[in-house]
Length: 245
Image 1 (spheres, rainbow, N blue to C red):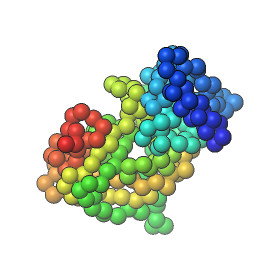
Image 2: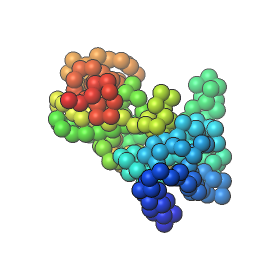
Image 3: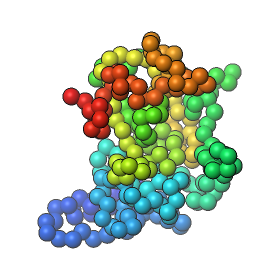
Image 4: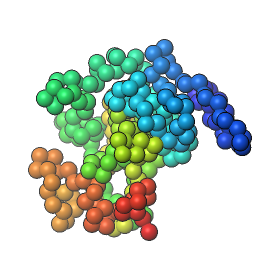
């Protein structure tokens, strides 16, 4: 994407200027301005962080500014928040206003987002995660899905709102982990969804695959990553709590 390369070059040059005020970069946009890559409501969000302001003031669309530097910037490379669709068409396709008793919610894929076999079963396998392996997720540790570190955001096929954090907006809701002791997860290829290409790999943490783990949700068997942190199966490489030694 030539525009992105130009923005990165300009931003990198600006960082070399000492004692000067950086100029605002022009946002990358489609005809409906849906793909802002740099620049925020105040113009002061660092280029390795997400802005506190949401795009068009709508939390469903994620932060107005998306980073171009750092780990998150790399994972967001070539990401377009609404795919090839105009904003309203994207929301009409993927947002269900009647969900959650009228509060609205995303329409997530069936079978936990895996590719599906001809017989309707998800294409997943039990996979051991060994000490030293690093993985990450865009979402707090109460969730149970993650991907190998460096998986592109577009390959995860998750909505733009996953980049929003109410407690630390600049972090883009990004949390990374390192395995301390071996445990098993389900893993498999992610199906395209939310107008994203998918085909990254995902890890699904469930109670049944970890001896001694409690059952938090009898319907889904989801085991929160927070439990892995609390029980020293993993440590965090991004957060002060449970930080890796």
